[in-house]
Image 1 (spheres, one colour):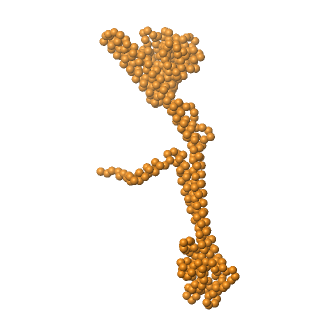
Image 2: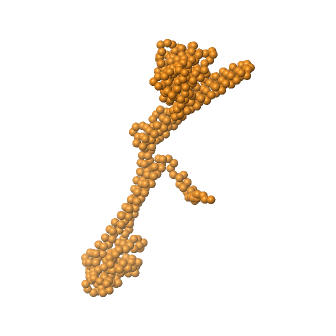
Image 3: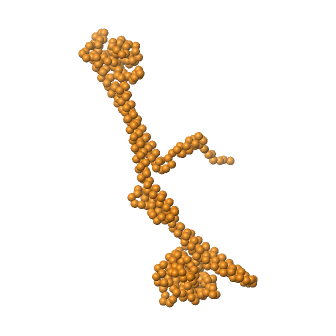
Length: 471
């Protein structure tokens, strides 16, 4: 049996990483400022190291040049043409004799008064002169001392110079200058880094101000559905694109919420009729003892109402999922609407009649056709005096369904508001309804590629025309 090998980090490393993450800034502003500070610090450290290295090298070169100049000047006073080698006396040679050693072979001719023969500094000068060539070294005798040696005259039989001169120079002023420059560089680095951090903090805060505004707007939108847009003008291109994307997302959320609210209202509106039938049948059945035939009839009505409710839910939910047009079907419009008329008709109410050919194939499923025409017929029954007529016909290959009543009709001033959800001409007219049936019928018809429209007529009453694709 084989398995996958899983490698885990050591517990100590995991705890260290967690501790470092916990100590870092928690805000984007702090993290960006810290990142900028780290980058600036890296650059400043590199520049400081390079600059101070160059300066130290330059100061060392200056010290070496000073020593070489002094050695050359002293070598001019050494006479190697005669034996023994002797040092020529010149006027004002005191500066030349300061910190200078003159050797004839291995024999010390002159030395500084502060460094007698055998002193550590004199031994270092002797070792340097013994090499027989030009070279420099630094001797630490409590203070840095620079030493430079140069041969004088021709070489003897053994290849060694006849004489040599060594000069010394105190390097403390040069080292002090380098140290002063180093501390000044560090102070400048600190000031520059502090200023860079402060400017980065302010700049990032200013750059993120639109993000803060977007956050506040999103918070207000979640509370009160604010109409303000996030893609404001004068913002960087990246934030503008972000605001545009957020606006589109919020628009989609608004549309989903509106659709959900509309679906809830439509479900409650459409389920009201079958629920009323169920309630009426149950009240009638419980009013007094019923025979077996009457009970069976009641069961049939209840089952029919339950089927109607299920059909309503399926149709509306299919439409909400935008699948009504993805699952086309056909139905006999005459048979479907006659069944609808039978369910809507009441012995004590206006009659619902269906006229038309014996059969008319419609290019929508039966449930969808019933959900389109049902709200129109239900609305007509609310206002009809004596009856509602449903006429089925054909026009240019399409199915045309007219739903007319002999009620008071639609007020001319209200025609423009007929299909607006929640609109009613007179909410206090004593008729039920929430103003959702007509908008639902039109929306479902348009989903199926049809239309619902109101047509004015000379006689009293209202007439609505449904146009649907033919089967």
